[in-house]
Length: 393
Image (cartoon, rainbow, N blue to C red; front, top):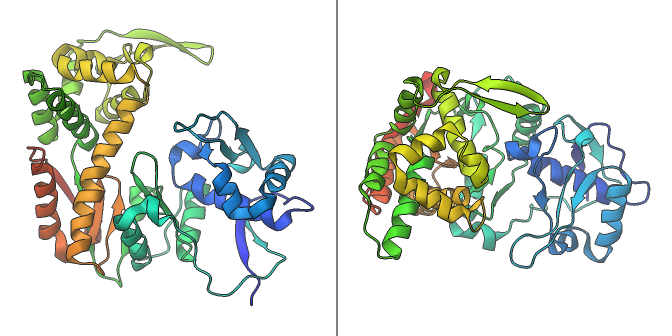
């Protein structure tokens, strides 16, 4: 029997009665928050689903007292909206403790040595469980230089072999690694051997096109030429460049927006590829009225009306549904398709997934590339693939 130390948000004082329980909750929420940038925002960070079943799993019959203690001690904000089958109750760390800065807290009660972390195997499914087993295969070549408090925390957890992974409601596989900047991930190796990453160019827009195509086919509708044009450009890895060329040519005139009480001009003609890509991603998550003002949507509507029709018709049932459809399609291909096939062939070989990016030993590059191509060919698509050798960075 040993005592157990855990990281908690810096400055947090666990509740005077439920000290161990609130400290454990604080530590778990730090881990969950670190995995997604949207949750880490200093203001308006996304809430985390935390149903009654999750409270009960962590704290048993005393969960309601622990929840009250967490609120009383200033640890959490709550979002108690609830709808059966749509969304459970949610919580998040308060702004004061959603910074990434942490300190070590020693639990007052002893726990059994060697106890393994619990995983939700049903939610992870077989491929997710196998990916979890491979998280410990990776090491940093050198002591990584972190650029933020959250990155310091994430690196510390990895170096302590404190791994966590889950699949969200939209089938994406999230782990300690998914929230790390790519510049930090590029310092990973396996026993000093080089790694290579493979990711699909324009993966989110391509997933959007495939989702739209499947909807058309399932409804037995004729396939519009502009839908095929969209998929072809995405498969070539050129959809952002196409949109940017139209913006740079001045097809969307400068316009004025007001945000947080400030008014300023937006000139899409000056956008670079990064700005164009970011605007596309934002377009997926916006409500219809706001989306129509997005220069990228205006380009889509002008040149790819079939895609615009799919986006608008899907968002009428919920503005988040288009983004969710893209994420599910991406995960179906890259996690349940590509990663699952690599694990079937090499069940003990190191493999790490970062959404549309898959990292393997460099010796397995040709095989991985062929599997990616094969999984996309199921949908009649031959995607452009980008490769990065870690030992060349």
